Each structure stands twice: as structure tokens, then as C-alpha cells.
Length: 257
Ligand SMILES: NC(=O)c1ccc[n+]([C@@H]2O[C@H](COP(=O)([O-])OP(=O)(O)OC[C@H]3O[C@@H](n4cnc5c(N)ncnc54)[C@H](OP(=O)(O)O)[C@@H]3O)[C@@H](O)[C@H]2O)c1
Image 1 (cartoon, rainbow, N blue to C red):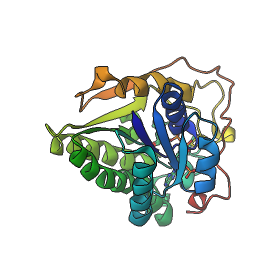
Image 2 (image 1 turned 180 degrees about the vertical axis):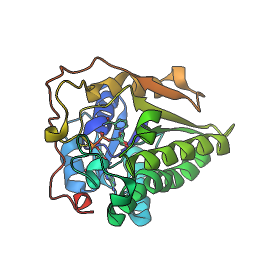
Image 3 (image 1 turned 90 degrees about the horizontal axis):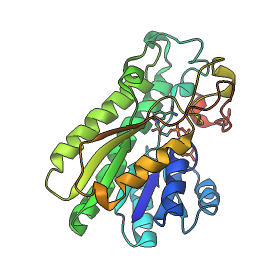
């Protein structure tokens, strides 16, 4: 299985890339920095790292082209790239803000990445899969409660939009051999999206490793032909006092909005 993980340098994407690579898949993982993607990929068996910014259609086209030639095709796309509420409100877990307080630049950055980004990558990969006779697309999603939670503009709407997009993609691709599924963890998961200082005491979080078994199943023969499926996987929670270990850099341009 040849898999492109868009947004595979940390968190859920890295956990899925790692599970896939260690079980024998050939993986191309991407991130905004080609250097970072390559050094992350170097830790995984047979994996390659590629620069890809999902907000930029030219970057997407270049990266998909590279992934296709370096892997010898793409059997599965995992659309996982995303940015979270930290982009507009670093204290979103403890001090939610109203939608009218959200900075315009941050709103646009989240929608560009989380919604338009999924579309741009799928738009580039799908014609290749159709020409090859089939393929699998897995789009990462969030729970309904996250989509609708107070203080969660623009992350909630961006992911509600990407879920609607995924369902339409599955309908458009019906009977073509290209399948589309949604995958989400069974709860909030310790990743770069959750700032260590903002995680409330006593709240339980999942380990990104919970994404391994469901992505392996979606890549397996058992899942051939399965589409329009919502897979939620609730793995064992971490201890209540454990904190995220993978903070997003504070000087990242996405934090500026
Ligand atoms: N954490 C949760 O509780 C949770 C729950 C449900 C769903 N999700 C979903 O899981 C996905 C992964 O998030 P995460 O929680 O694992 O956070 P994360 O650790 O911050 O990972 C985000 C990934 O997206 C990449 N990325 C961000 N902007 C990008 C861009 N413009 N172009 C290309 N890649 C980009 C990052 O790579 P670089 O920084 O190297 O560019 C990184 O690999 C997101 O789609 C999120 O909505 C998360």
C-alpha cells in the first residue's frame, strides 16, 4: 500500500504514518517545511518526506507529483493537515472567545487549511486514482460537539465544512473504485493543537497512537470498497495529569492571526 499522509509531521498524522510504515506500507508524509518532513520521515521505515502547503494549489500539485513518482503511485490519501483554535486564541481551552472577537486573518487561515486544503489535495489526487482504477481517501474529522462548541469559531465550522465536503466527495465518487471515509479519534488527543499551559487539570486526553489500528484497518483488504463510513476510535486515555509533549512553535506564522 502506497500512502500519502498530508500533514504527517506531528500528532495524529505522524501516529498514522508511523503505524502504516511499520506495518509495511510505503509512506510519503508532508508538512510545510520539506526539511522537517524529511527528518521526520527518516525515522520511519521506507518513508519519504515532502514539502506541501495545503493552502497553495501549486505546492499541492508539486507535492502530489513528487509523491506519485517517489512511491510509484498513491493507493491511499490521508487528508490530515490542520490548524486549530490556537491560531486565533491561545487560551481557547480556558478562556473561550465569541465569534465576533476572532481575528479575520486567523479565521481565513483556519478555513484555508482545514477546509480548502482538504479539497485542494483531494482535487489533485483523485484524477490520478480514477485513471489508475481506484484508491482510498481518508479525511480526518472531529466530533459533532467540537463542530458546534461555543468559542470554537473558526475550527468547528472548518471541520463541519470538511465533513460535508467528504460526504459529497464520497457521493461524487460512488461506484468509481475511489472510496472516501471519515476518521476521527474518540476524544481530544494530545497533539500540537493543545497547548500544555491551557489543558485543564483533571481532563483526560487520548494518545495519538489510538489512530494506528483504525488507519491500518482502512488500508487493509477488509476495508476494500468500504466508503462513507464514520470511524471513531476511543483508545485508552492518558493519565489526567499528563500534558501535551509536542507544543506548536509560538512564533509560527499561523499564530499571528
Ligand atoms: N488533536 C485532536 O484532539 C483532534 C481531534 C480530532 C481531529 N483532529 C484533526 O487531526 C488533524 C491533525 O491535527 P493534530 O491534532 O495531530 O495537530 P498537529 O500535531 O498540530 O498536526 C497538524 C499537522 O498538519 C500539518 N499542517 C498544518 N498546516 C499545514 C499546511 N498549511 N499545509 C500542510 N500541512 C500543514 C502540520 O505540519 P507542519 O507543521 O510540519 O506544516 C502537522 O503535520 C487535524 O486535521 C485535526 O483537525 C485532531
